[in-house]
Length: 75
Image (cartoon, rainbow, N blue to C red; front, side):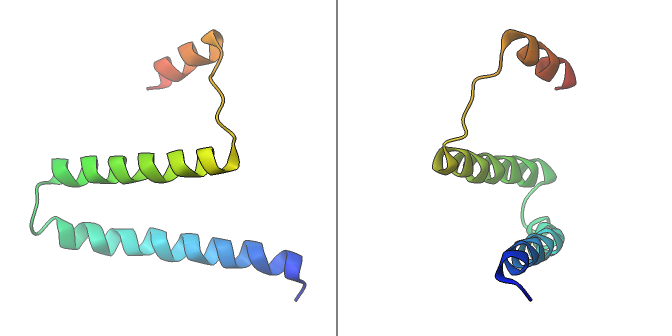
């Protein structure tokens, strides 16, 4: 298999494993803490991870006013 095709396959496999593992981790976490706590922890972890990825890739962009309005409506 070519190296250029191997990397996306490995990345997709890691995403699938993380996605599947999150269901098990959530079920275990719900034994000890409330669902609201789990939701906020997941939100916080996602914000940190996505924020780090955006900063490392230097892809941060402030949305235009028009786009910000659409984002607010979708929220």
